[in-house]
Length: 390
Image 1 (cartoon, rainbow, N blue to C red):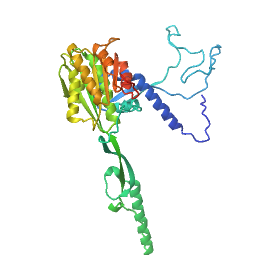
Image 2 (cartoon, helix red, strand yellow; image 1 turned 90 degrees about the vertical axis):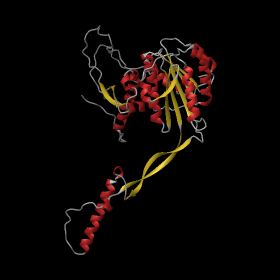
Image 3 (spheres, rainbow, N blue to C red; image 1 turned 180 degrees about the vertical axis):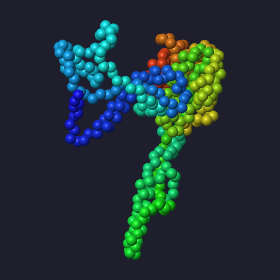
Image 4 (cartoon, rainbow, N blue to C red; image 1 turned 45 degrees about the horizontal axis):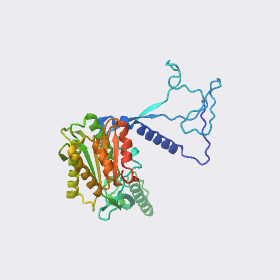
């Protein structure tokens, strides 16, 4: 069957266009399948090189095909169609065969393997930590770019300039031929090995850039009311957060805090895999964050981000302490995000207190009820155009 391609007198790079379309398909598939990706709890806390399979719809070239002369296959549109819409009435959608087996070709679906780091790169392309202050005292110089700047005689194997080394050897060989010819010696050079003086390495010029250092506090309610499903949703949120900050920023410390009635700083492995129980004092996690900020992260030097995930089932006597602790964090942090993990439309008393009494622009509230909510809540919490009061 003939395939018609558009004539291009300017030698348009079709491969570049195919790569762009493939990237777009991958991005769409990742965003569409993100809940299922995150539902694979085994990936949470795993290595960035862990691979995940993503289904991608195949691309086909436009072709002319024989139609069915039933009068319903006219493919003209009205002008309001969007990309991907199908025109014409001869479309056998789901259930149009009355549940019987069909005889039409199906869509080509391929599976591609991507590492967790590649998935994160697709998702976080346009996201940044909001309210990131370029504080004079918090800025540090970092090596930003390495550019090749000439050649040198000494270096490491990865910087070996192979082409230049061959050129140096050929120059020496040609010089020897001219010297022999000048002396009237007719000698064929059959073997001409490299010498140390031939070997050249790239000289690397390192440019430096100012980076703002920041600290991200991940606080999670690990009490008995947080069942396995709730803890999984909280860890899914923090999994995205940790991968995001480690990928996008060079100088970001991540502090993990788990609490029931008592809070403690834990390792990343313990945070994502350890199971605890007990009662709930939300204030304990926030107070520990305040203490660590006072000891290690002076707000004059550090950009501070705090995120607290809980089901909101707090001990009533602790509510006032929790509100005061969150307000204190909002006063010194760039952003405080409270993520409540509750089923249905239930709203806890502590969340009502937070939203009614904390009117700070850098205070964000989100609610996760199912795995499909993790990504939208994550993006919403990182919005930088938030108004007063969250």
